[in-house]
Length: 116
Length: 117
Image 1: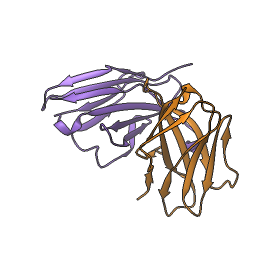
Image 2: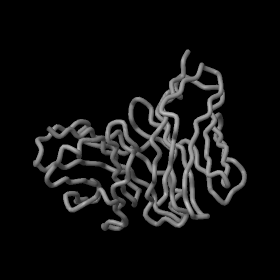
Image 3: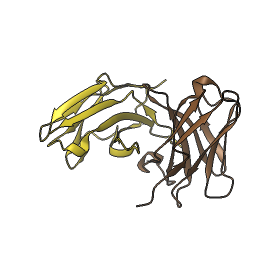
Image 4: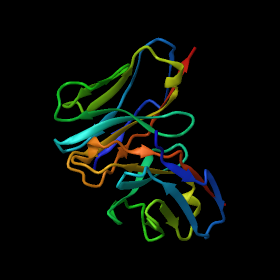
């Protein structure tokens, strides 16, 4: 069974600095997707970034980028120029590439506090 | 921007009672999901629903649970006889259809906090 592990329950960063959140996963499949979701204190979870396992190039979305290490089964999220609005819980998630049900498998989450 | 809405935001129920959690997905979405998050634990998949039937359910989703799309706009989760361990935040999500489905982001509601006494 697929598992997703986030080993950092809490992290903090100073505004404008860079922070990296870690995620590892376990799968025997070759075709899958990885995601980072953000859940601000208002509770609605939103998609931050998606990575296709078949793509070697790391995904980027503005200040958010990932370091996808397929062999190591590692998928970290880097937030550059951190802003107060980045304060949230961040979840790493996995989906089978051939999924026709949309099931997401989440990690435990990392609470990020951006300090002014 | 369209949102997934969930009601109520907080539900308190006596153990053994039935509870219905309600969700209004985004109108052009065709896939619907329920997830739950027990306090301090990870978000867990419960069920996905497409074309008026369950497409996948987890081990958690036993006979006490059911889902329904009663009127083409609402998507409900019913827990028939609640247990203390059902206390959790329940999230509804929806997405467009497409292949691969992973390219269609899931949009989440704010959640319903269910407290079983």
